[in-house]
Image (tube, rainbow, N blue to C red; front, side, top):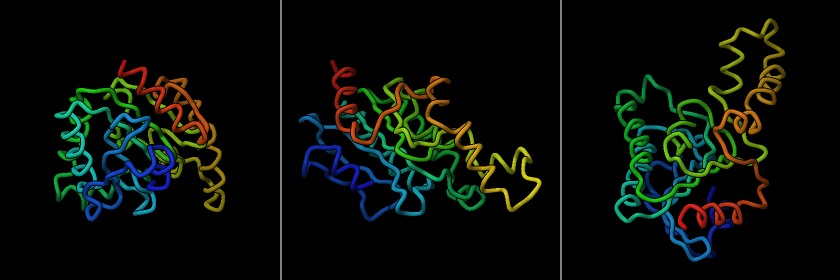
Length: 211
């Protein structure tokens, strides 16, 4: 996700916070078109960008700073979901997720959220969803957005009668039900964009929201 940040935001403007902590979440400040914003981003290069208690707390702290300074927030979503609940709950995971959701709700400046890759279930909701921020929600055309991951959905619905076909059925489920088009139809995102448009569309959304 660092490569995406370097491409989208003004050259050399990104200042990362907490780089040594909770590597599955990247936070910091950058400028886009000269406008300073806070950045919250899943980092799929570390543990699949899983949302764990430490990552949720790290993001919430950044959002708290943005709230106090009335800074707009750009959220970049690409995560395998939330960490193993049994282990995470020992660290008060539910409270951390609730705190992250509340931090988005309480923002005092506009928010733009872009789904770059995977965004499933609880992780989708608390990572700056449109329902929390009331801002602009975009998704790349390759994004996968749904109530649960394709693998989990196939197992939950009991659609696999031959285990060797699990991947095939999950891929078909993802294409049909986890596409950005379906998310747009249900109102979870505002538009589907190409990766080459990221900087332009984020900048335009901020310009509109901050006007």
